[in-house]
Length: 82
Image (tube, rainbow, N blue to C red; front, side):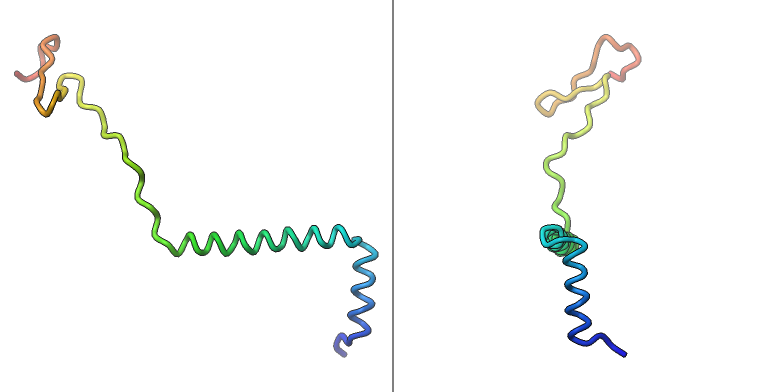
């Protein structure tokens, strides 16, 4: 006892009466967007992640700062090495 063509046609008519033509097309559009979003997500996952764009290096300690590649010592801090 499977579904034959007349049974499927009656089922389709009942669904159209319950939901209306506009609502079904809207649901199918949402379904298509979901499928394309899923495919895009799978493609993004398969490709390696891009390296992060230029990161800012951490700041130098307060007692030492570099100026043109030379280390400058803060004379206001007596515990700083000289």
